[in-house]
Length: 381
Image (tube, rainbow, N blue to C red; front, side, top):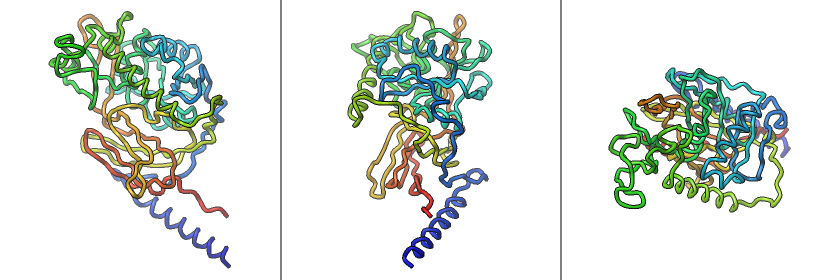
């Protein structure tokens, strides 16, 4: 009798949950697909993710390219100062069995970011995703959120350093001047006052004409092969690499590690739509895959997962506000420009039965979303 009552209560609770989740949210007249459900990955991890280098619980760079291109671009990044001193803090994977459908952003830049791409890369535990795309030489490369879309026609060592090291990993602003200029919230490489290590030691022009950069012709200003980040930006990168290294070594990990089988792991994927009016939830689902140590990349928008008492369970940061577009410049022309992003983006959140609220704070303010059913499972029969 007791088992019958438990079963009946479980079934009723499940039906109520399904009805509430299926009808709760509608965005721009479209039904929100919010009921959690495991989505089959379609491939085993061994078939999908291939390894170039693995150093344990480190930052995962996932290239969507053949092995030759993945090795070429990853070596250029990790040979570029100061990343060359932290080569062992990165894992390098590549995927050559999945064709990424890249579009054109404003008809000027290759743009590969999508929900499907993030889902696929999660099978490799991606922190940052690099897609090598083949476009005409006049089409720019781009960086958005945790994805760098690199036009293979632009191969110079500096393009990977600029897009991945500068924009994705550091959220650096452009150091060339363009109009209208957008300075990312919290960016650190363009200063309002001409004071870096001492008075008047910078150079005028850093995204905006009235801001200052430190390096006269650094890699965030020019894609010339001899360009470097310069001392000031290198110090900022080293500071962040040290923070990341300390955060990783502070985690409880085994001394000798094996590759995690991400095809057997799950996480919560929440999709949003963003425009000038704010952000709205579009969908949510439980997916196969791993969340890396910097699951949603790096930026100055902040998210926190809270329990019912308001305690932070998990937090991180990301960039959903800007799309950076760049290409080797012709004489007298700027590298590219930055655009305020309007469209869909996703966040990857660990499953936790105590999670109640997802709080997002960006340049538009703070948004709170109830995720109390994250990780919900069907009753066992």
